[in-house]
Amino acid sequence: MADTLTITDNRTGKTYELPIADGTIKALDLRKIKLSDDDFGLMTYDPAFMNTASCRSSITFIDGDKGILEYRGYPIEQLAEKSTYLETAFLLLYGHLPSKDELSAWQRDVTYHTILNEKMKGVLDAFRYDAHPMGKLIASVATLGTFYPEAANIFDAQCREKQIRRLIAKMITVAAFGYRHMVGMPYAYPDNDLSYPGNFLNMMYKTTEVKYTPNPVLERALDVLFILHADHEQNCSTNAMRAVGSSHVDPYSAVAAACAALYGPLHGGANEAVLEMLREIGSINNVPGFIQKVKSGEGGRLMGFGHRVYKNYDPRARIIKKVAYDVFEVTGKSPLLDIALELERIALEDDYFVKRKLYPNVDFYSGLIYEAMRFPSPMFTVLFAIGRTSGWLAQWVEMLNDPDQKIARPRQIFTGPERRDYVPIEQR
Ligand code: ACO
Image (cartoon, protein in one colour):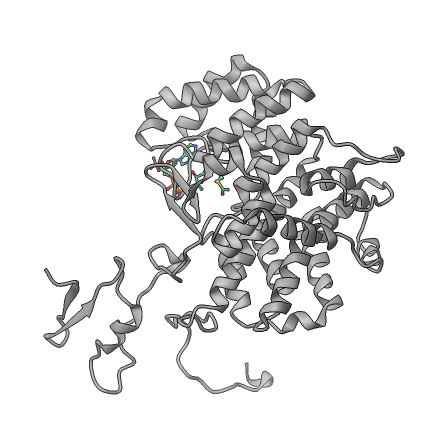
């Protein structure tokens, strides 16, 4: 059996044999299929890259039918149970679990870089009091890059390593400062005795105490949420990171672009919608009626259910559900939890959802946890961005080291007017 694809062009009667590797053909091989020598050659038409592999990647594996998610081969369930976010970030970036020495050097380096240049406060001051924290995050990350002009040396591995540490470190500071600006509280500086999530909670919530002590359960819950959001292969924001990074711009500008992609409601904003939906349902007694409305198409969608890739229980949702119980032990149970549980119970038994393979996704329970931890809902996407930064950077480095990659530049099918002559305004 040959690993090739034979194509007959019925326009010309010519036959072509294209190699198949890793279940793909090279789109460029199709260019040999021409009507004449001066023909451009055949292209593929694939809006939204529904069936196009844009890269080779050894970072994250997803099997959506089986509900499997692995970072560098390690199941997400094991990482969520045993690892920390910083260790997972190292794994994503360098491909292996760190040794003890590697981990302590990595943690020390990232922690050391958490402080921001004081001028960054001026960036936040320019925003209105009610500015969305994601707008502030995008602007702050882009601005950060201007403090480190050497970051433009993206092919200098040592310089690149420094920017990676700076970006992962400063994401929590920039995110927390954005929150303090929103609520009008003085900025709280990093405390480098604390863990990465603990330090973030310190910068979010420290008030007049001399030293902030994070609650260990909430600190761990946040760490697990960062792990679960750290990478998800070629999603919209990662594609933005790679596309923008392919122009060889500095990593701060590329991460700002990735944050902008994440800001969109189709990507990073669904957990906020789940909370709104649960509040609207209001009581457990209203759940059957709501499900009925969703099924009949009158009630919108069951938010937090369904996924483009997962046609099985999203493995992250299972872990998040467990984390929610741990958090509620500390914060008290959210009254919305019972509504969520009842929705899930009914939906998993209902033919409409079963037939369409609609299961809870990562967003179904995460909003409830964030709310219990006192994060206002506009901060939810910011939390996603903090976790995803390590994945964006791992994918960026992989792209820079990949000899197959060039500046991302798709083709188009031109549908505009044919050539015509300019008409002076008085003749129009
Ligand atoms: N509630 C009710 N019906 C649904 C839902 C839902 N949440 N999701 C899909 N369906 C139905 C559709 O109406 C459609 O039914 P039909 O075949 O009778 O027309 C069928 O299931 C297939 O739906 P598609 O829209 O084709 O599925 P797609 O893969 O394009 O959409 C998406 C995936 C966008 C996630 C969708 O399931 C959805 O809108 N879910 C709710 C929003 C949400 O939770 N988004 C977060 C995703 S996770 C993340 O991005 C981090």
